[in-house]
Length: 228
Image (cartoon, rainbow, N blue to C red; front, side, top):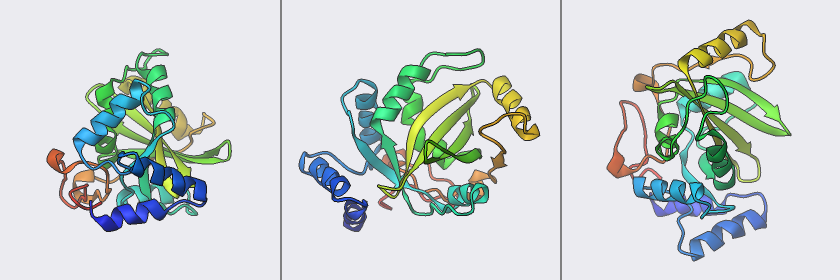
């Protein structure tokens, strides 16, 4: 990370309240932008154990591949280079609800899964839908894993001019494919449609908060090696 990135991030916010909140976090010795695997693991741990109430931290920027797929679903939405953020309150609620299966076909998500959010976004497989719920624009992103699929719910924050990660849900391959078939046929209400992403190893351009010591960058991929 360079000084200009922090300066830029601190200035973003439609209201003085938002900008002051970032400033208070900085003055308290906390990092508004997470730049290492240790930063991310510590913040996720604090989220899950209720030690970071009301906190929002940035960990990267939306890159071209993700921005393009989302734009294909909603052409009025351009998220390129918007900051990616972790919303602590929403993610803690998500962990409480989805760390154990709720329905048949759900798979449990661990603290380590939540730590992999930057990796999941860097290597995402597609976007199920972009829709509006409770006056908020949501992008439903998914990533296949060894155990099944992880669905990553992200919400556009107009106030913070960012894309916030708010929820992770684990589902089995069988359940995901059943839902995919229904979505493809238009039998379900939301999310509708499925945009598959192109090969991430060739076209991924997501700038995410993947720390430099965890260097997982792939060809044509920009990760957080001093790039933030």
